[in-house]
Length: 246
Image 1 (cartoon, one colour):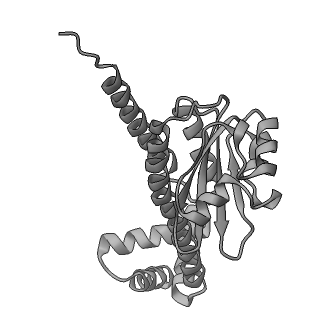
Image 2 (cartoon, one colour):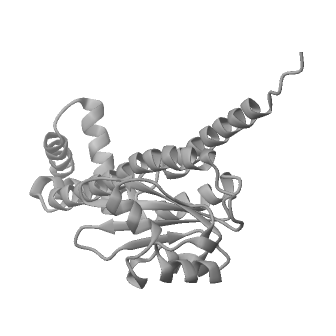
Image 3 (cartoon, rainbow, N blue to C red):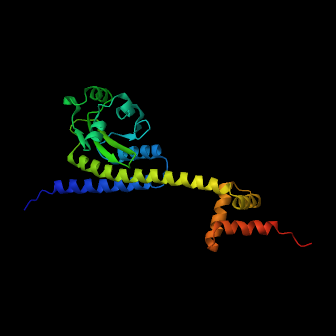
């Protein structure tokens, strides 16, 4: 019996390729705290990892802020930038909350101005998938092909999984940024606290380190001794203030 197993092999390779992409994205974004840096890493990893995708872009809408853009190749950034006009696959994906496919831009009529610009830049096909990040940011990831009919159902599946995973990763990036800002505000407050500020000054003098590092030393001591930070600070200040025996 001669069984044709080519299609299952293609599907398996597609699944493995997508899994590898999601792992690489996680590794690349997991420690980032800058949202724009994370967007750039996202589009570059996607471009390099997905066969048939020549370029990748991201369109971000942020409440109270200008629309954000990231592009794997700078000359195509205008295709993702809503300041050049809202009539685009990305905006359609965001507004309709569904994936948008244009496999061959030669006959595309939905976004005439955008399509003409895209074709002039060498783009022949596009998939735009909506990305939900948090209550303040939404967007779309855009996959571009250099040949018509190159984007397949497998690319659509990849785009769907990518959008879901990217939303989680980008939300985590924004959350880490918020946590850092909160910690910075708390540090500033502590440094202006009387006894804690004095203790930090002592550690800075002893170690020749900056305030943030001195505060970390104080926190580490409090954690090791399992006592409140203020109590550790008070003990340190009392110790250095105690008159030495003659």
